[in-house]
Amino acid sequence: MNPSPSSEALKDFPAVATIPVQWGDQDLFKHVNNAVYFRWFESSRVEYWHKSGLYEALKGPGYGPILASVTCNYKKQIKFPDTVLIGTKVEKLGISSVTLSHDVFSTTNNAVSATGKSVIVMFDYQSQHPVPITEDLRDIFETFEC
Amino acid sequence: MNPSPSSEALKDFPAVATIPVQWGDQDLFKHVNNAVYFRWFESSRVEYWHKSGLYEALKGPGYGPILASVTCNYKKQIKFPDTVLIGTKVEKLGISSVTLSHDVFSTTNNAVSATGKSVIVMFDYQSQHPVPITEDLRDIFETFEC
Amino acid sequence: MNPSPSSEALKDFPAVATIPVQWGDQDLFKHVNNAVYFRWFESSRVEYWHKSGLYEALKGPGYGPILASVTCNYKKQIKFPDTVLIGTKVEKLGISSVTLSHDVFSTTNNAVSATGKSVIVMFDYQSQHPVPITEDLRDIFETFEC
Amino acid sequence: MNPSPSSEALKDFPAVATIPVQWGDQDLFKHVNNAVYFRWFESSRVEYWHKSGLYEALKGPGYGPILASVTCNYKKQIKFPDTVLIGTKVEKLGISSVTLSHDVFSTTNNAVSATGKSVIVMFDYQSQHPVPITEDLRDIFETFEC
Image 1 (cartoon, rainbow over the protein chains, first blue to last red):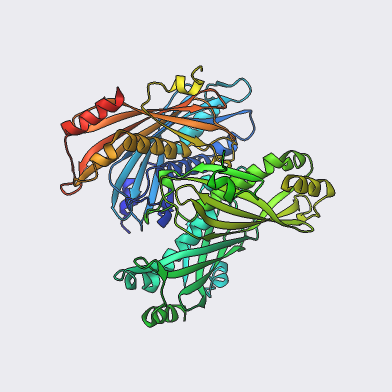
Image 2 (cartoon, rainbow over the protein chains, first blue to last red; image 1 turned 120 degrees about the horizontal axis):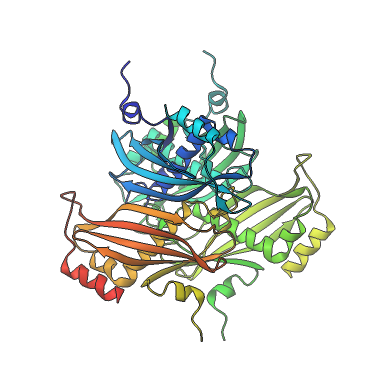
C-alpha cells in the first residue's frame, strides 16, 4: 500500500495529532480562526509528551515544562470540512529549553497549510527558575526522534 | 463482526459526529468544560444538515434555520484522552420548529455521558418571523430519519 | 443619577458579570456563536459564587457544586461590538440542588437578549453522590439574594 | 490625577483593548491557557483597525489584510480573576506587509505579562497575491501612530 500524502508530508514528525475541523472553528471569514491553530499545536505537543514517555518521566519531580513562546505561520486557508494532522518534532534541544517545530497538514488542501514553533523551558516551580534538561530526559527525546 | 458499543448506543441517530477530546477542552477540574459540549452539539447538527440534504435544500431561499434554545444534561464526566461520538436525531417536527435530541457517547466511559436538546426554528430573514417548515423539508427529515 | 437600562433590567440579579464581546466570539453568521453564551453563564455563576461567599464556604469540605444541566434561550442576536451583562440569581433552592436563572443584557440591543438556567448539584466527591445543601449554605444563598 | 500603571505601561500603543479574564480561560494549570492570548491579540488588532479608520478605508476594495504569522512570548502567568489590557502598535510598515507588536498588561500582576507580534499582509483576493500598501493607508497608519 502506498503511503498517504499526509504520512509522507509528516514522515519526519514522531508525534502527530489528527483532528477534524469543527464548523465552529471557522470565523466570519469562513476559514479556521487563527487562534484555533494554537489549540492544535497544544494537542500535538501533548501527543508528543505522552507518546514519547516524557509525560511519565516528568510526573515525579517538582519541575516541569512551561511554554515560553509559540508562533504560527499561516500558509494556506483551512476550511470546514477538513481533517488536519499536526506533527511535532524537536528542532533544537538546548541547555534548559527545547524548540519544537510543527507542521499542519490539511487533508482537503492536500498540503502543509501552516507551520509553527514552540519553545518549552524546563522550569523549577519552587525556585521559579529554569533548570537544565537532565540526561534522562535527553535520552527520551533522542530515542523518540530516531 | 459485532457492532461496536458506540454504534449500538447511537443506532437510532441518523447523524453522528466523531471528535477527539483535546487537552485544551479540559478546565481546571480536569474534565471537559461544560461549554465544549455545545461546540460538539453544533458539529453534530451540522453533520445532520449536510448528510440529510437539508443544507443543500436550504441554500436557495431567503430563510433558514436558527437556534432558539439548547440544553445539555451532564451525566458523567468526560476526560482527556477520549473520543466522543455525538448523535443527532429529530425528536419532534413542529409547524415551524424542529426539536433535535443529542446523545454524547464517550469511548473511554463506554457510555452515553451527556444528552442534549436543540430547538431550531425556520426563520424568514426578511420578515424576521418564523415560517412553516415546507413539505419538501419535511420529506427530507422523514427520509433521513428512517 | 438615573439608573442605567442595564442596572434596571438586571436589578433582581445579585451577581452580574460584565464582559465585552470579542471579535472572535462571532461565527460565520456574523453574530455571537451559541456556545459563547455558556462561557458567559459560567462567568456569571463564578461571580455569584465569589461575591456571595459560597466559594469560601465550600473550600474546606470534600464536596462541592457540579453542573447537572444548563440551557440557553436565544432571544435576539448579539453582535460585535457590544458589552454584555450576565445576571445570575436563585430560582429554586432544592434539597441537594439549586436552580439558577440567567439574563444576558446586551448594551447594543438595549435589551435582555438571551436567558438561561443552570442546575447545580451539591456533590460528595468521595461517595460520588449528591448531598443535601447544609443550613449554612442556605443562609449564604438567602442573605445574598435579599 | 496620576496616570494608572496600565496607561503608563501601554502609553506607546495607540490601540488598547481591555478584557476581563474569564474563569473558563484557565486550563488545568490554573492559569490562562496559551491559546487565549491569540484571541486577545485579535481583539486588539480589531480595536486598532476600527479606531484608526483602517476598517472603513478597507471596506470598498477587493483586497484586505490577512494574518501571515503571529507569535506570543509568555513572560508571567496570568490568573483568574484579572483584567488585561492588550496594546497594538506598528513596529514596521513594509511594502505590502505591516508588523504589529502587542503588549499584554495584567492588572493583577501590575506588569506586562506577555508580548507578541502579528504580521499582516495586504492581499488581493482576486489575484491571490500580496499588494503594496497604498499611500492612503500609509497615511492612516502614520496619523494614528503619532
